[in-house]
Amino acid sequence: MKFKKNILCIGAGYVGGPSMAMIAYKCPDCRVTVVDINPARIDAWNSAELPVYEPGLDEIIKKTRSKNLFFAKDIENQIKENDIIFVSVNTPTKTFGAGAGKAADLQFLEKTARQILEHSQSPKIVIEKSTLPVKTALAMERILASAKGKITFEVLSNPEFMAEGTAMADLEKPDRVLIGSRETQSGLKARAELVDIYARWVPAEKIITSNIWSSELSKLVANAFLAQRVSSINSISALCEKTDADISEVARAVGMDSRVGSKFLKEGIGFGGSCFKKDILNLVYLCSYYGLQEVADYWESVVKINEYQQDRFTANILGSMFNTLAGKKICILGFSFKADTGDTRESPAIYITRKLLAEHAQVVISDPKALKNAAIDLASDKGKISYIEDPYSAASGCHALAILTDWELYRKLDFQKIYKSMVKPAFIFDGRNIIDHKKCFDIGFNVYPIGKPALSRFEDQSSV
Ligand code: UDX
Ligand code: ADP
Image (cartoon, rainbow, N blue to C red; front, side, top):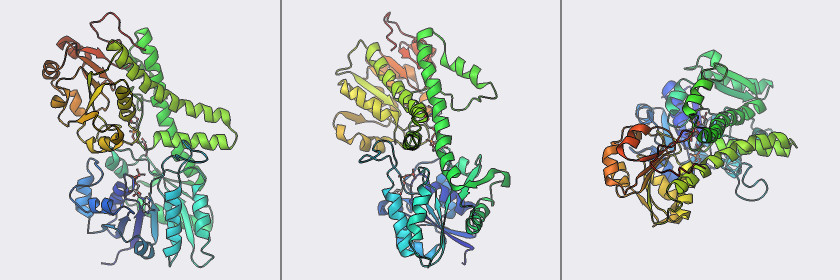
């Protein structure tokens, strides 16, 4: 069959896989191919067990794979054969050299740009889909411009706003699709071509266009704003614990103001995920680079409050359990950075587990989807941690439960049964405020929520 457009995506990760699956599903007349340097990833995408857990993804893959969606390993050949190339490779925070700990590590992106340059035999539209620092498109353009006039490349920015766990719904009904381009004749033409793809299922008024730098910056700022709301509510949760105000009541009252809105005001142990911290640090680095130190400090404080919230949580466990955790068994319920994903990148659970291990606690980790990733994250602590998927078996014989992910299944646990199997006095630290605290207290637990009074049988309720 002859397809109308041939689309390639380089990078078959959390962004590349689901977003290309949606394009293939909505555009049956386009052939979509996804490649990756990691052959095992491609094998997994071609198997029954996909490398990414995302509700609804399996069904879309079943409907499109081998029809107009292909996962392939021959990157060079695919670059030759496709006219539209999405770049969705990872861009982690640099761990070395200038900007270490803040700036993005662009080595994977640069390698991809050079590969595109080397193997292209016809003009291409190259679309940045990875989250990137502002002006990355310029670097990409400069590398591609060394083709010396033989082949033309148009670079577009099309940041992905989907959230993990709801990726398929977000891709199907996005709040907006943003496409940035050069405002030249060829830039506008390439922009129109990409608009045409999204217009198959996204209403025209939701497809917005801008210059390329605004598009790149918008992605960083959108994530910084969302993360800032989480840090704002978490900072107030600390104050609630001191004043006997209840953070849920405060969040509801504040969020009902339509100017504020109710989303992203859920208190917890802080944000995780591959984007928030990385994007804020990119923004901070950019501001410092341009000498805007006050602006850099403002945004950096969002990350500092996030770390503070995790420190507070572990200090509260230590203080409430009589200032020693040595030899005590603590069951961590939930390791992924949020519900409905197996992704553990930047999960607060990693940091909290390490802190508990530093106190010589014995840690048992339970999670319905993230145990494999948890074991990789904590490989250096092998032998000190047990991984048990079933929450009842995991909790048995433990002194405390720490709920770190908002998985629906934890709301519905039989806490009476769990209490019976635990060492007494038994503690619950609800890092997500998702369970019925009063009910658990009545069962016999000492219960420590976030931003609300503890329900404890001990006089000395150490909240930090
Ligand atoms: C985020 C952005 O939402 C998405 O638009 C962007 O494309 C990628 O980054 P994601 O990281 O997948 O998506 O998840 P998100 O739902 O934003 O949650 C991020 C973190 O904040 C999670 O750890 C979550 O538990 C936490 N969070 C979120 C809260 O603690 N409280 C809230 O009210 C909302
Ligand atoms: P994201 O959440 O941004 O999608 P992931 O780490 O899940 O990030 O996915 C990025 C993917 O890009 C990985 O599967 C990685 O192997 C792949 N990748 C990195 N560099 C290259 C490259 N030069 N060519 C092809 N794929 C690459």
